[in-house]
Length: 370
Image (tube, rainbow, N blue to C red; front, side, top):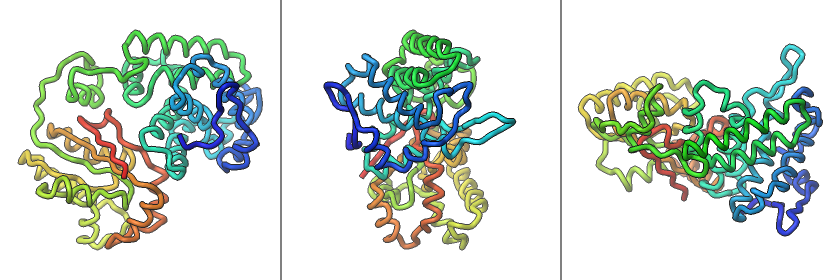
């Protein structure tokens, strides 16, 4: 992995000062206060150093292959990357509510700009997204469902390592309870056969329905009653979605939000409500006829994708998400070459909501980087 200053064998030493000098997102951790009840050790920077040192001291981490060690270490280094933007005081207490989810998105953009390969990057950011889950999963009423969701994108044994380091890298009264819960999480994941691999389902359709509806048996082989197939495109403007469609689906009808904007004379910076309404009307027409089609839009956040995924699922369509991305340099170049380039301000806002699709959302997901 092309990430600077990773700890190296045999002593796994690394230069904290070099990391501090190189990355602004590390420097802002210094001075970011934490609630003393949970973090009597001090600010986020002190905590992060303690967490990384706990990772390095863990023999289970040391025996991992080099690339896997890098993934877990970088996730630990960045696990609280969003605390400086999420921290606030409420009723006299310091809170950073939402920092795991926000951290996933921030880390994705940082690592994309560093040209960390897509699949490696997603392993890191999903560890960040779920790094608090092992603390409390065993106490949740929907523990099995959440565990199965986590396992689809995250190795639970690696997640346990990151969260254990998070617990050891702090001073708090309930540290032992946290460590006990992490051990229970790992044991539960092993019992459910998803400690090192995604939880398996009888079919893609069974998996899709399990994550679409509550209280489904994960072992039930669902009858595949899907009709038409819908390809839902996802990716930043300039990532190559139009080119992929021309190459792979030239005969498929396409619902293009860009085309609708042009037809309706609505700018990308305007309210997009009318565009989405028209797109949904067109989709319903295809779905009623059980006709295959492609929905072409950025669809960068899970919430944005739900507009079309929920509609398609309601008509029993088979859903495939095709996600495309390219390097930062290529993205800006290709966006400039578009007939109607997207304003930089719009792309910056999209980056703040950037969630790469995963297999809990569709029957199939293709991740393409070029």
